[in-house]
Image (cartoon, rainbow over all chains, first blue to last red; front, side):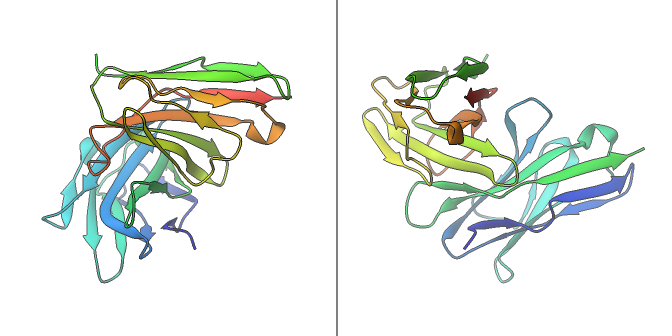
Length: 113
Length: 113
């Protein structure tokens, strides 16, 4: 079973509209959870991370994510997107039993002018 | 500037010809890892290293070798490359395995013909 599941492979959204990118994790993943962004022809960049504490995590570029233990989810949100947010977004988590990391298959966010 | 440096950026090689992709970080990070990125599959962990002389397999280690003789370097070795190893490879490092705030290299696009 996929350890980290991103439910949407592509998300188109109009500029200045809100967006939510969904991520669910399995029992094999610990509660150390992360979101990364990948712009075209670049490496990945950390957006935000949840290690413990407040379930609402704020990251760079106006993104935030909410950790929900009961729903095993870590969805990423932004209230108003810009053209520059067009990129691939990856959810990731650390293994419960070791030191491996698991990435989701990615969500391609396209912001439409 | 804190960074992870991978070389080369692009490489085309023939089946069976041994190659090494280098990775170096200047942040004194303990944890380093190699990933391959394939369309529709996201990033999959090949090998990781908790510290000098400590390495372990990720999800897709077959056909790859690594070594960690110095803290800053973590080369990826393909002893006998095959076409199914054609992929985009990323090296990443983080302070430790729990922190998970990876710094990624810019990637190496490998084509094996």
